[in-house]
Image 1 (tube, helix red, strand yellow):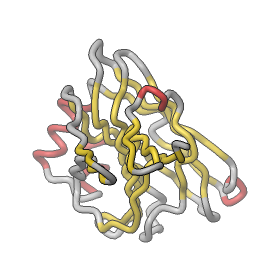
Image 2 (tube, one colour):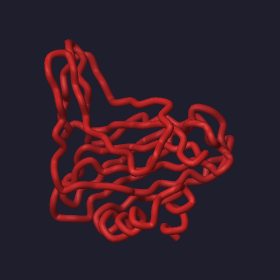
Image 3 (cartoon, one colour):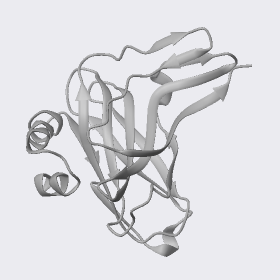
Image 4 (tube, one colour):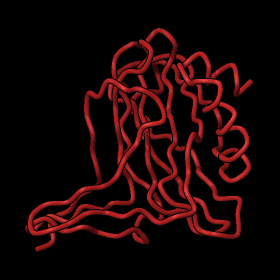
Length: 185
């Protein structure tokens, strides 16, 4: 099932094998799929990402696929991530960027996708990711863990600049990127 889904979205066979062998045993995403009705839009929903290992995991990427007939960037918005206070804040001037979640919206193989990169998952720990639809959509939204690492990221920061390493698992035509930010003063 996962092999078919990943191949439909343009993953190469070697990448699919890597996801099935190395990512699935470490990361669990529940539910795998949610069905949205047009009456559900503006309602908040969530999915849970869990680390099934006894060691922390870093830069875990969750690919969120939208209903098959949507070819534009996702009309959903990540509104909250529980347990985000364990992630580092990177400061740029008087703005603190929580590097715990990088959100990329775009298009892959003519399908609307959202990629969520969680910086840190504690051993045997979970994060609940809340989202809402920004417009009326109907159909299934699927969630799939596609990448993770045992090594902490090397965030780059300097005076009034910050860089967060990011490598998408597939070619994505980018429409937007976001973080969770707050004013420090």
